[in-house]
Image (cartoon, rainbow, N blue to C red; front, side, top):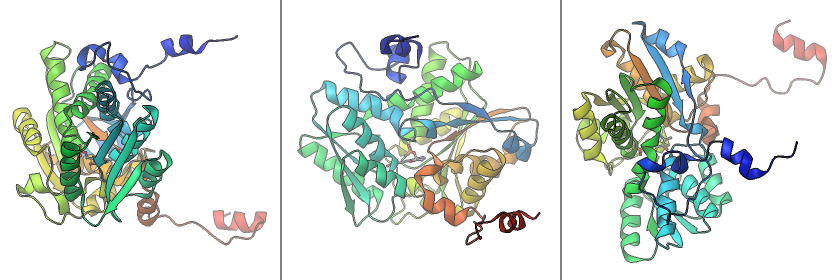
Length: 361
Ligand code: AN7
């Protein structure tokens, strides 16, 4: 049977702008620049629930299954569409990697140029590959993300380039759709939402989304928001900016989060917390997800699960918890190979008996 593309597409997920049109700041004059992002799976994670005990239910939101492999696509489709609507021809962002990959892809789709400022030596290989493949101008600075963000904010104020970091409010508008999807899937908001925190945009966006749905009667309640920073970059948890942030989770190697106050408001209004997890705890959760749940996320994403495990004593009996897994494990193959604690059997002769011997037969 011959199917035309429009018919196929009308039955498929149209991307989050078209799906959540009435909840977003778009109109008929907004060109929709989309890679059909959103609608990511919410998957049951029984091994994590078992580690917590208390007959709780744990789900993970696989936002690493967005088109460029991270949640950034949710914000980028809205920010880039709005920039295009206003006539922008070029985009700029600072990034620990995922924002640059997403900006580069949406710039390509929208026929715009992208400039991305990166902390030299601290961007995972897959993210670098994406930015370059999509044709972005990648500028590696001898400095960290916070310094890069300060520069791009000044450049966007001075030159004709649209800033697409999460200080652009359209980014958070797009990212709040992940909270909509969780409520749409579960029928109401969960008890707890656990999420990694870097620049603190995403926790703020989720809170906006849960609040928006609650205010429009789509849910009866909002979750308690639990954000987790990496210990070496835990500005909000420690209540002071960190000049030299460090962590194995390079995506959240951020010492002065731009959405700091929005994030603490979400924490306080929801009765949640923003804590920190060590690199060892992050890597343990990273391996647990891969080996016990079959889910390969990037190290920063595992901070949500590491935090939940750390806070297990505070989990209410029978709670429903969602952990957000923000990025795909394939983004950072170097960290995976270094920390998987599994070895390849190499140099094996190419014959049956040698292979069977390695297998233990
Ligand atoms: C996988 O790409 O900041 O707290 O420049 O890539 O909203 O910053 C990435 C952040 C969590 C933290 N998980 O989210 C960037 C960047 C992953 C990330 C975060 C990031 P925010």
